[in-house]
Image 1: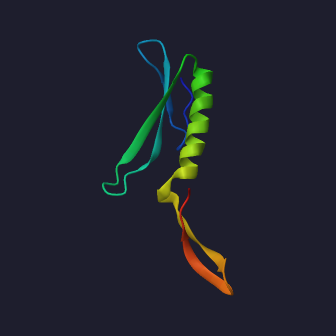
Image 2: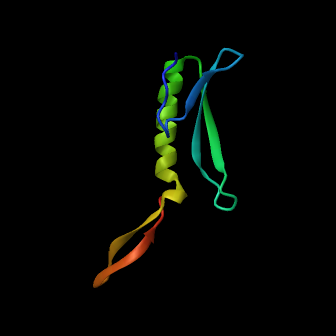
Length: 86
């Protein structure tokens, strides 16, 4: 029985052409709310695991839907501002 991947880790499969494919959720469309799914390809499963890991970490860092609010020091006092990732 194959190992299960945890939530947020994407999935890995072997394609008919012999290459390995990893898919992950890159974010969500703000208008429709649907997922944006991207993929990475490689010759070996280990190569795809590594590519998938880096792609997921980059997409989480750049995901606008994960923007939050924080206290920022502005001028003479503190203010509550919305923070958007770059």
